[in-house]
Image 1 (cartoon, rainbow, N blue to C red):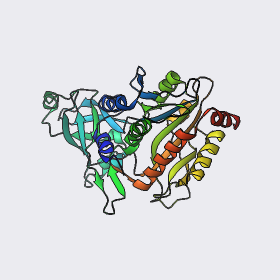
Image 2 (cartoon, rainbow, N blue to C red; image 1 turned 180 degrees about the horizontal axis):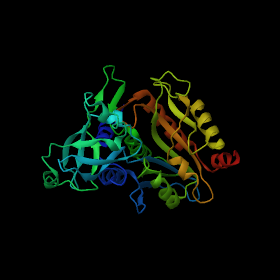
Image 3 (cartoon, one colour; image 1 turned 135 degrees about the vertical axis):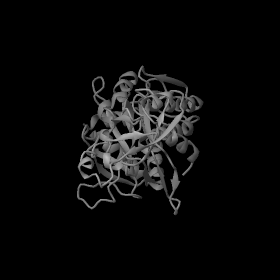
Image 4 (cartoon, rainbow, N blue to C red; image 1 turned 90 degrees about the horizontal axis):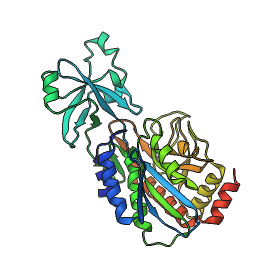
Length: 354
């Protein structure tokens, strides 16, 4: 895996929905190195543009900057912190986990999510939801917690430890969903900086995906691309024995043909499959009960041909997750093959197949 330092920096940065500013600043500084132009919408999504020939198709690639996490919503008299989840989070997974409150200046206040000992069975019954958990930062009382600088609205993210598995082929970290997509767009703009393409490439990152695909709505309205491709880590089901589980490590990028907010555009499906086969790129069909930014982007203006390139990722929406480097390389390969292939004739073929 190339550019590990880039991805690891992105994984480590804190940034929940509405609090992506640290990630945005880093992404913007990287995109500025390789782009002809930088554009931002008014809620924080940021994109770099590489201009193609006048009148050529506009192809938009988007990761999203927000990770699942929480926000401070109050204090208990005993100094414990009340939290509200931002994104789908399982309270049982987050019980007794190391978390950090991130102050406005980026200072980390470490804590642990409080859980109820099994001896107190009646109280334990109420600890199934994330919002039932409390964050213990060791404050003696409410005033002590506030004296540490914590305010209502501060974000809370898992403490991170990036690990490579013993075989050197998998990576474990928080925020793979979707700092992976952020790294992908930065790498893409770097790789195509000096190429002559037959399309205009707009690549960057949206905000607030985990709470309703909000950044995709504003960003796609701003850019109005001909094609929109979301780059997103998606739940890998190969550790679950269920016919409803999709995605397997090492089988390539995810061809997301159906999810809660989108049925894959027929022209995009044909384009993805033909391009993957022509370039010997491994892919696998994928269904998800969730959604990606493509679901919102497809509804912009009079409609946009949109689809998702997914990275199979185990244990997303928890304190840490894992992905296979071979699947990452397959996703990189299909993105680059598409960028080099798409021109006005390809776009006509995509639009014809609906």
